[in-house]
Length: 271
Image 1 (spheres, rainbow, N blue to C red):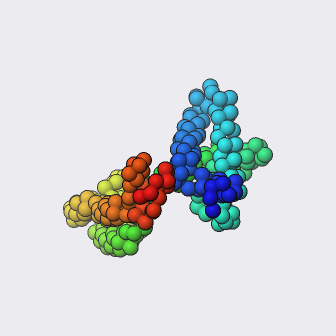
Image 2: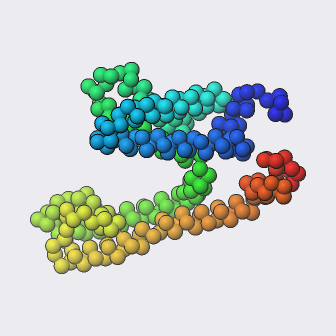
C-alpha cells in the first residue's frame, strides 16, 4: 500500500504508535515534553503556598494538559488496530488514568465525601509511566529485566531463605525481652539489616546477637550487588546483539535500521 492510498487512520497509526518516521519521532518528543511539563504542574500544585498564589495559572495549565492528553487518548482509540486490546493494556489504562481525575473532580464536586479530591488529583503523577512508552532505553531495560527474571527470582528466593534463617536465629538468641517478639518481627529486622537500611527500631543487645548482626551487614553489601550485576550483564549482551542487528544508511546516516531492511526508512535510499 503506497502512501497516497493509505487511509487517514493508517497514517495516524504510524505517527501515534510508531517511531520509525520523522513525524512519529516528532510526535513522541512533543508528547514527552508535555508529560514532563504536566508533572511539574502537579508537583507545584502540591505546594500550598504556590498553589494559592498561582491557582488560576495552575488550574488553566492542568485543564490544557488534560484536554491535550484526552485528544491523544481519543486519537489512539480511533487508530488502534484493536481498540479493546489497547484500552485494556498497561499504557492504555495509564493514558486513561492521566486524564480521569480532572474530569471526576469537575463532574463530581462532592466526591470529597468519599475520598479527598487532592489525593485523587495526585493520581495524575501516573503520567510519568507514559514516558516509558516513548523512550527506547526503557524498552532495553525492560528486555534486560525480562531476560534475567529467572536468575533474579532464584537470587531473591535465596535471600528469602537467608533472612528467614537469620531472623529465626535472632529470635532464639535475643528473645521477646529485647524486642524480637516473633519470627516475623525478627525477619523484618533481618531484611532491614541485610539491605543496610537499619531503621534502629529493633537492635540486638547480646554479644552473640551483635555478631550475627555484623555478619548480616557484611552479607548485605554483596547481596545488593548481585541483582545489579545480573541486569547489567544482560543489558550488555542485549546491546551487543542490537549492534550486530543494526545497519546504517549511506545517504542520510540513519543508524536505527535493521540488517534485513532493503531501503532506508527515512530517506528511501537503497541500502
